Amino acid sequence: MNPTPGRGSSPAPGRHHLRLVGHLVSLKERSGCSYARLASNSRTTGGTDGAGSVSATTLKRVVDPIQGVPVERAVISFVRACGVGGEEKALRLWRAARAESRGRLAGLRAPHVDGIRTRADLAAALAAVYEGAGAPALRVLQARAADAGIAGHVLLPLSTVWRTAGRRGLPATWKQCAAFLRACGVPARRMGRWEEAWERAVAGRTAVRGRSLSRPAPGAPVRRGRTPSPVINWTPELEQSLMTLAKALAICAEDVKPVTDNMARTAVMVGKTVGSLQLEKSGMVAVNALSALLHSLEATARLNGLGPSSSVNGHFPPVVQGRRVLAPGAG
Image (cartoon, rainbow, N blue to C red):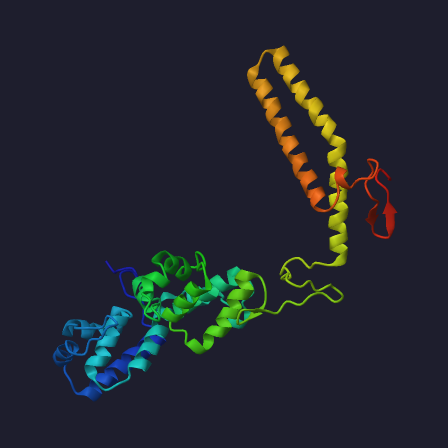
């Protein structure tokens, strides 16, 4: 019985994987070492980045395209055991081969860093950076986030790495985002553009190195000591509308206040008549809630210079609405 085509067979190696294998084989030929000798060399050429001693069998699998893309640690150990350089190129080819093998990078449709505008754009771009870095193990990524003597697990929690790499969420702060990018190999000279993208997507404003580019609208007053809101454009028209609303709420509070007193007495009478303590309690809760609302309205009105303390003979000052002047109670 002939096997089903493709079943049980390994996928064909990609173009970048073949280029990686070719580069590693050329390094071995230049070194003139056997696999046994390379394995012996790997015991003394390990570093602090996780690369270390590997067996001759593992080294053979590294350059066997049928075995799939090798792990990063094995590639580094292979190159260092050869002792003829070529590590930077090998890692560049390995990252391309890993991204090609995983096949997720194109599906992210991530924008360029300068084209990031929303949180979704930023999430896709960070996930693309992770895929482009070869999708290293999360703990490896966490260890690489270390900077200025601060451990990686302090700067970048493992849960944050998992969410960001899988496009499940964003880092909580720019400091965490910078640590993630650094761990993925983004150079320091590009961090400024990423910080601008972070500000656009998360802070909701266009910024350059932490400085807001938002400008007040033409004709809008500039208030000293007040930072303009990135969302609300404070204009004289808006201020006048808010004052009109405050005056209307103050008038409403004065008109409705006697009603709440009647409601309280009615709730007590109904509760006693029906004989239900629960009904009386429910009525009082509703009355108390309405009373609290009215007290809040009164406080807001007084903060704006309105209310009984500012009324003249029980009447409030005229309410300006557009170009018309409306007296209280006018239609």
